[in-house]
Every structure is written in structure tokens, then in C-alpha cells.
Image (cartoon, rainbow, N blue to C red; front, side, top):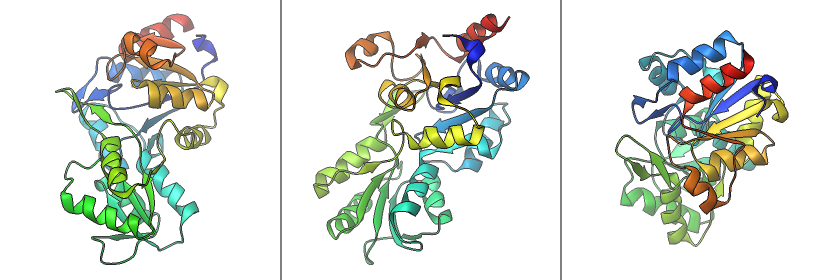
Length: 267
């Protein structure tokens, strides 16, 4: 890969920049490098649990200052999709955490607490407080005609302990109960990548996507025409490349090595 041609940078967060609340090696070094070279970036995550402000605060705790417009979550992309799908002010039932609830509300929709009223849509993402009642309300509303939208399809996500159940696991439960497959918004779909490039004013040929998961980060980057780099600090590794049949442009041990390789090419 010719890094001298790269003018913009997109990266996943979980498994690339950190695991849980622990920063991965090279975090501050990466952002210092991007700043010193004037490279615009977008931090694009399928994790719909946090708001933009919560991500900004997390970066600050890890010693990195980022601006709100650099963060693109699947919650934001999902809310954008809903604005084009259903009427303004419609009722929406959300299975998810603060990030998804806030994005749906800020898009102008009324978020229901249960299934006592009709809903135009049921939106589901990762939810660490998932209950049977939440699954029940989602099932009832979808079976009554609500469209079913998923923030992302990641079955797992990486933590300090290992892999936890992801949004895709919750979508699977709702799909099983409703005989309905969701419209999935996050990576590997193109929307998040296209919005990121629009924000940065970049083109696919000069933008790289760095991620830890082949079937979302890497496949999604490829579909959007980006160069792709897999880092092995999260879900996938050289062995799973052959198993999944998705080949990134480059495989590196992490963002620390990424900065070294990039810097060496520019010297």
C-alpha cells in the first residue's frame, strides 16, 4: 500500500483503538501522527450503545481530544435511515442503550416505552440491560406491522475478558420470534462510509479503513471502494482471513505498527 496517496482515515473503535476501557498500544501516538500530518479522520463504530458525547468523554479519559464531527456511530446512521423511511414524529420502539435512544429522539421520533401503542418501526442494537419484556414488546410490534431495523449485525464485540454478545445476537433473537429479518444499517453497509467521506471531503481511492473485523470493517470498506487494513487486536487474524475469504490490503499487529509503517513511508 502506498501511504503517500492516503489523504483521509477511517477507523473502528472497539478492538482497534481500545478493548473495553483499556487503550490499545499506540492510541495517543496515532492521533498525534494524524494531527501533525493534517490527515482528517472519522471514528466509525457499529457500537450503538454510546452517545457522541459519551465517546468524546471516553477519548478524553484515554488522553485523546476529538471533535464531535469525527465520530460516526451506527446509531446516527440508523436515525438517518429512519428519517427517509417513516413519517416525522412517528412512534418507534427501541431495544438499545443511550446512544440509540438519543439518536432516534434527536431525529424527531417518539420513543415508546412498551407495546401499548402502535409503532412505525422497531429499532434494535446492543443492549446490556436486555430483558424478556424488551424482546416481547419488539416482537409484538413487529408482528403488528412495524418495520424492523438493526443498528448493526455484529454477533460479538471485543472486551478485556474476551468476546461479548453483540447487537447481532439480539437481532437474531427478535428475528426468530417474529419470522422477520431486520434491515441492518451499520458496517458493512455503505451508508456510514459514505457519510464519513462526505464529512471529510475525501474520495474512496485516497481513504483507508482500519478495522479488526473482516465481515464488517474490511468488507464494508471494500464495498465502498476504500483501501483496507486489518489489525489483529480485536476479532480477526491471518487464520480467519482464509476461513472467511475476505482479504484486506494489509494486515498489521495494531495501530502502533500502523503509525510506524505509515511514518516510514513518508520519510
